[in-house]
Length: 307
Image (cartoon, rainbow, N blue to C red; front, side, top):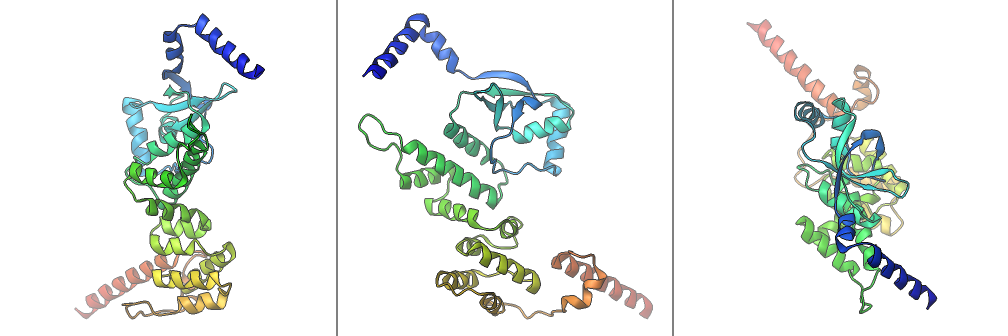
C-alpha cells in the first residue's frame, strides 16, 4: 500500500510542477546533428550493411546533397545514442568524409525499438532471406514480450498466434510464410549463405532447417564434393530420416545421388582432373564458366585455322 501511495504522490508532484505542454514536449521527437562516433549500432542488427555498388551510389549522393532523410536513434541510460534506422546512411556519411549525421531522437523501449528497426528496414527494395528470417524473429519475440503485459481486464494484449498473423498483415505475407522464414534461423551459416545466393531454393531450405547442426554440416560437405543442391523432395526425405534418427552421412550421399525429376543428362568431369588448373577453393560454377569460355575460344581458333 505504501508503494502505491508513493507512486501516486510522484504523479501528483509531476502534475503540480510541470504543465501538460511541457510533459508532451518531453515525448516529442528531437532532431540533432550527432557525431558518427556517438551513434552505436543496433544490437544483433539483422540487416547487412555492405560496401557494394548501391552503397557507393549512396555515398556519392551524400557528397553532393548531404543526408536528406535523418536517421532514427534513441538515447540510452548512459547518455549514448543507439541507431534504430539509418545504418547505411551512417556508413555512407563516413565514406563521404562527413563527421556528423542528422538524427531524429525518439524515446523508445527496447521492444519498441526492435519493432521500428525491423519495419523501417523491410521497406528496402531488396531484402535477403536471412535478413527477413532474423528480423521477423526479433520482431515476433518483441511483440510476444509486449503481449505478456496485460490491460485492465487482465487479458493479454497480443496472443502468440495473433502476433504472427499481425506481422503477416504488416508485411503483406501470410502468417505461415512468416513462420517459414523464421525457420531459416536454424540453418548453419554456410547453408544460409547458399540460400541468400540463390543456390538453394527457399522451400527446400525450410525443410533442411529441421536437420541437426551436425547433419547440416555433413550435407554441406556432400554438396561441395558432389557439386549439387537438394530439391524439395530430397530435403523432405532428409528431414524424415533426421526425425527418425537415421540420417547418416551415407544416407545423405544416397539421397543426393538420386536423379531429380526432369533432370537433364549431364556430362561430368572428376574434380581431381581439373583442380590443378584452378586456385584452391575456386567454386565449381566458376570452374565450369572458365572451361566453357576456353572451349568457345578453342572452337573459334579451329574455325579460323580451317579457313
